[in-house]
Image 1 (cartoon, rainbow, N blue to C red):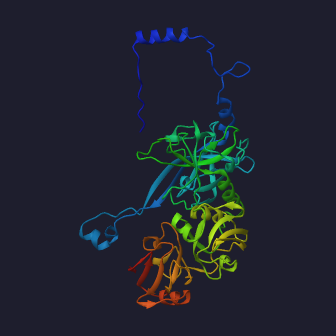
Image 2: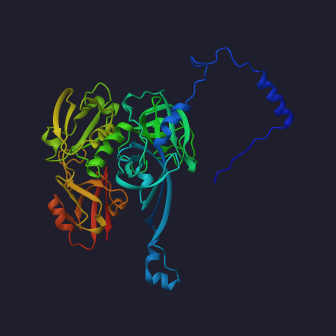
Image 3: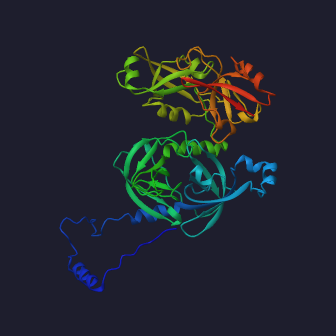
Amino acid sequence: MLTLTRFVLPRRVLAVATVLMLAVPLTVPGQIVNPDGSVPSLAPLVEQVSPAVVNIATSGTVETQSNPLLNDPFFRRFFDVPEQPRQRQVQSLGSGVVVDADAGHILTNHHVIANADQIQVTFDDGRELDAEIVGSDPETDIAVLQVDGDGLAALPLGDSSELRVGDYTMAIGNPFGLEHTVTTGVVSGLERTLPGSGGARLQSFIQTDASINPGNSGGALINLRGELVGINTAILSRGGGNIGIGFAVPVNMARQVMEQIIEYGEVQRGVLGVRVQDLTPEMAEAFDIERPNGALVAQVTPNSPAAEAGLEAGDVIVEVNGTPVSDANAMANAIGLLRIGDEVHLTYVRDGEKRETTATVADPASGQVRADAMHPGLAGATFSEVDERSPLFGEVSGVLVADVQSGSPASEYLRPGDVITSVNRQDVGSLAAFRERVEGADQLLLNVRRGGGAFFIVIR
């Protein structure tokens, strides 16, 4: 609930203030005016772009997370606990941007339409249209909707790579349900990352001080040319309101994701077959690198594109397709936005010498095994062979947890980078041995190596 505070002035003070305002000359020395005598305003720009920014209202159902005891019939009967609802209704409000008027395509955030059964889009002219989800990508928090309507207006896409810190921007959205609210500010930072940002793994946010609040998600971040340069997606706040730090997905990233979603209905994200980490100043000195910029290769998956291209653990990747790589996150973004089959040119440093190679991005299922059909407790996890040459794992023998879907059963126990060395007290040195031990087992006792430690977990 919003509380609006009104400040009321006594009549006497108001009269004095009115006289003072009337006494101010119409032309003030140093006043900024246009050649025609008008005062500069963003109003014409707002009028131009507002028809393309929409309000998005969703409704749906989600599974409730309850105490396991409450799901036990004996417990409920013994303590006379009523039947617990398995689902609950959810509603959300957000924003979106029309990017293709003819096709009716609308860009928004994944988290705006997640779990939505019904989506209604409201336009600046009051029209309300039902929308369908074309596709969604949690890894970048981007989704594409489609509506069937005539006379739509779309925003032209700008080039977010041209943005500089200090450039003026304008945010348009529906914060707290207040339709078509306009805020202005500047670009405060570029290539920002936010740990735990709604599950988005690929991050290179634009930071702006244009006010962004709940309900702005999916709305437009616009430059002074009236071009879309970002999709507003997150705020940094302790109390849930704006404190001048907001974040937007760069439109160049959103465009790449959107093109794949429109063509395939999903993002067909390829893999290179490396695990990388940030290059610290100490490591840069040890690897004979002048500046601590680049992504240090910690592991190369056997038979992967990276292995075929000649990459080895200890190499430092400094460029991808001619674009400098500053750290592991930049490397993840560069590869994570490529399609399966794309050719990628890599520049890396080995033993102080700069080298180049080319690899072809592969299907992520190549050389990996999804565990969904093996055991219900491992659903959502993907496993691959361990590169025993990697200094990250030494001479360890086992299978590598290559990926874990957020919110899946496996995410309760496992993390990407874990190595499972035994199943039910039997060693597993390959994917074939792992599959043989897991399939058909009612209970799994896993020995997991994580970082410098190891532990057992039981999965039923």
